[in-house]
Image (tube, rainbow, N blue to C red):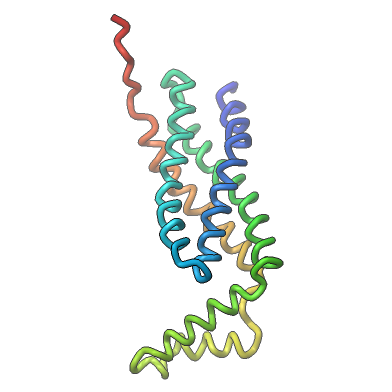
Length: 178
């Protein structure tokens, strides 16, 4: 019973820096159109997400002297993503609502212009549908985009945590004290 309390407590504590990391990944993605080098930064940070989750799970496993169950480590990862995504969602909402209010429209317009520039794509259904969405004001609002992103992050994070929990349970190598 003590281990599960420990798991949830650690997820709450570690969820804050993890959520800030997720928010930083999103911010680099949101501003990558203004500063293209942020695309590379975003990509590197995306690769860092499973590494961070693994490190948190591995730390828990080592602190429990190798007695953490797979399910407990998986739950730690899930809770990291759930709590981290809440914090990241709040920050991304503020970015989309106040710092970059036209971001979703700009991205849709860029996609429309890209499709139009491609030969033979002027009659594409995706282009027509996207253009209608822009014309009729049917693009998602910042809160809708953030809620969808929250569910996507928590689902993908749950699946990713299943893999990293398995890796985190690999045997602990003890140092020889001779």
